[in-house]
Image (tube, rainbow, N blue to C red; front, side, top):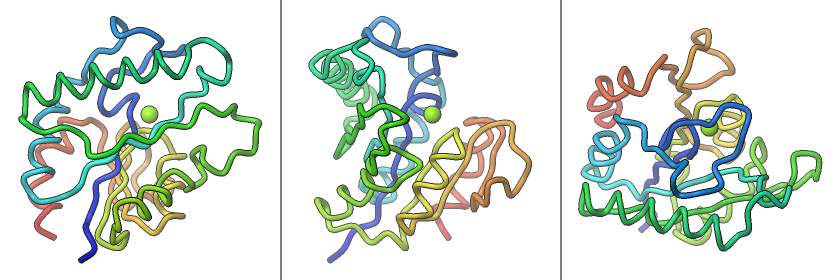
Length: 178
Ligand SMILES: [Mg+2]
């Protein structure tokens, strides 16, 4: 039986974005306050949860893959401690923006890998992010999409737009019952 999934962008959804920079150490990784409640509700509804994140700081040599993996191990441990669950998968792309990599968002490569690995039904799955490139990747993969941030409604063709994670959290039960 195929499964439904919730794909999460990382920076700006799970943890606070570092404006104009990259999160290269565990100390710089600060969770978004509403993330845990959002994650818990989604897991409770039987979704598989997967991180889909561009991390070109690796390609730029600002951190190693081992350092990025350490950050993700810390992230998973903290989520597990709070909720009793953790992400089922983490897909990252360290390729540079101008590399043309089909794994890097806005391309759907990472989502497509996860769909194969976990036998996911994309038509019942969601991608949530805070950038138009997250929406593009999700749509190209065949998912429904949620965009968080100060965007005009309907831009860039996201299925749902919320100005904040808090606003999304409040609406979440309705979305999940659709
Ligand atoms: Mg982001």
